[in-house]
Image 1 (tube, rainbow, N blue to C red):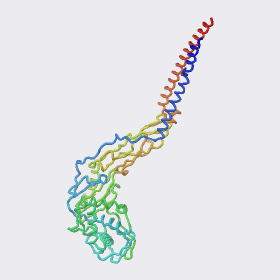
Image 2: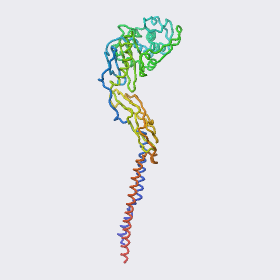
Image 3: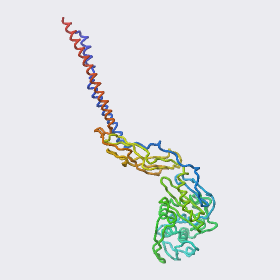
Image 4: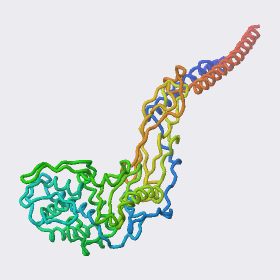
Length: 455
């Protein structure tokens, strides 16, 4: 064999590919990459994010309003921070005892609740047919007890005593009341007393009163007191303990929807109410002026129900919606869809879908799983606040899977991976066999040439 031919043979040996080994290495590399991607992806997050395609617009500003018997009414959306329904909302009418919302608010904002005040003769003036604590001149009583009495039993003498405790006299306190509501933007309201006693110069509108109620019930203590079922004012230096029940809760049986408020009345045909409510994902303020005792609770319930129809917003989930997916360890399937357990809605001030955020908090799931198993929670945010929450439920049964399912590789993917690796190894073996056959032919040819050269 010549030197040139020998060098060519050596070169071919150096670049020869070992197909079988390459196939095995490639198979191992695919397995490692596939496993790493599955494990890293599953570890990075237990589940996917909320499916925003589920979000749909709800609420029609032009929805037909219910028949309201009150002469004047307002439905104020706390979510949108504006009126969504009104009936004669700018009529100037008597508020009656819902005035006490503002009186008690100013008392809690300006006085120490545990401060003991001395009752004046003015506060003890008898008001015909008005609710009274029967306070006596010189009686010493705590501010907080007067607030409970004014809110729960609508005590007129208690409200007057609070006004005097804040400002010294009712004229000065009325000035403070008017100044306060003017700062809140209420231009059609004027107060001349602390208890809402009927007076031609004491008036408001449903529009203004909705704003007043919203601001007053921003005081959490006042809101809490307005929902107290019963309370006993302790004995004082001149009176025995006084037990009272809540007039608002006695008037309104709204299944826990009311979150604070106050009733008012002059006669059975002249009633008022101002309250805050939350019904599922929606919250608002209802004001009724010049209603009657029979229809007041009916009108209130109608407006709470109407809030869902008239307030523009978005339905975020329906019960049974497939809202996201989650990883499952050691399951035949390593991804499972999760369902919402209830209907939720959101009412962003911008009235834009982009203002709604949904945060899913998915548990670490491991097979076996059953349809309906709890898999985590979700929280709906609007206006920067959480407005609704729900549970995530497993959408289908998931049985235990093959060994690779411990690494979040489903049985289907495991079988597919096994087929791919098998094909690669088979192809490598075939290529290796073909290469060996060609190499054998080359060696045989070289041997023949070598023998020929010797002869």
